[in-house]
Length: 173
Image (cartoon, rainbow, N blue to C red):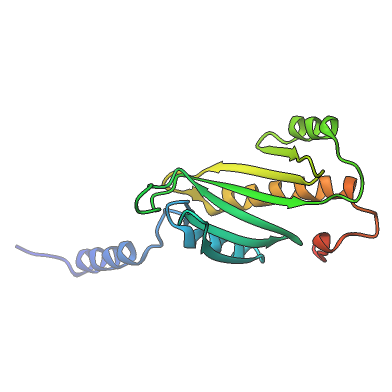
């Protein structure tokens, strides 16, 4: 059997190229892997720390565009506190200008994935829910965080003076 050298060289080079080709699968962020949430937030330039809530589920504390926020993990295994399926971004604050139910409804109508509540003490909580399952692409997660931050900034412009509020101190805006 006669084998030509160029054919062998092509097969070897082709095998090397296949073995060293970058993975076609993009990196993902998942509630199942809490560290991936921290890594993705840090990659976007935000401070983020992984801890636990009072029930033992993962909890990320973060500074997102000057807003103190929590990323709460939901649908976790009750025993192991792992295998979480979803996240909720949440920020609470005491507004300096009135923010009533009518404004809350307007916010919800303008922000498809967001929710806002006004407590009896007039504190405002903004939340943003995300189902991640086994993972969402990092670019999709980045859009989620950007949308959440824009929603916070939108409410912030209504409830804090134009001079700004310490929670809104962000040079990136």
